[in-house]
Image (cartoon, rainbow, N blue to C red):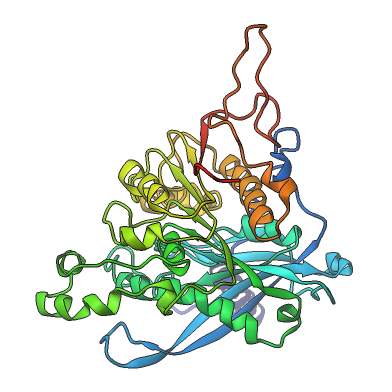
Length: 435
């Protein structure tokens, strides 16, 4: 049967088809993951005085070890997300959104509070903070913390660790394809960012204080951060074989993997503080105990006592106990597992367990975790990076956040900065001589 289609009908049909195609390929609408929780937000989790700008940079770490053959060198590209104090008129510029994909490569977009490509402050010296994701992850998986610290006067740089992101790794077919690169490059990437901003001549670098820097790492980012501030890796042939290396290759690669201080001969003295969220490596003893005991950089560990990835008793707690720094701390979320640092799950993650398992905590609200992380991270960094003794007072002296009634029936005081009756299930431990 022959169909007669006039030109108007054909144009309309093509228009509808193009519209359907465009909607299928268009970027997802940015989601708002956070609510306003003013009555119960810990004091130091409230936004700071600065308008926040954000900028994406493409940089190259030249002549790095090729983790495909472990003999040649290649240039290593890195994508950075930089949050910084911006000029006040920047509040009129476009608000940022953060696009990424889940482990199963489903795209999503999240609303931020920073302002995209806003003009940085024209003066000032704001300490540098490096923000390092886990395996697998992405540079904005802790965007809430990047924005928050920038609003309080820091320049914060989130890294997309090449070979180790959700976009780089086929989590189903080749879930560990980027793991060797992660072991080699995680700490080196962190150190490179500090060196890069020390030498860069941009407007952002101009206001960045690289002499007072901190590194924050989550999971494998924490594994790297511990090395960056002085620990040495202690891999053995058998351990590398368990990671999939053939026997001969594992034997030859032991000295390649066993670097210290991000590949340097000594720790860069510009690192003034380290925060490790659920750092990996304690259960497998990949950091040498001797070198851990020689760490002097102030260190804050954060863990869930039910962490089934990094472990707690023989994992994060063990790393805390091995750390030699006089100023060392451990904050523990009771009944939490491993996902104590990422932003809350985007809607698309709820479609599959593989994706949701990257974000969700069974006993905690992720937004609540994020707010407490903001509060305690700022207190710790202000104390040891900015040398603000007033903020040191926000690091709890009592190990249990739960308030109890005294003999007169009155509740004991809440932790500094926490609303009355709003903190339970958190513990805080200090080194014997900590501030």
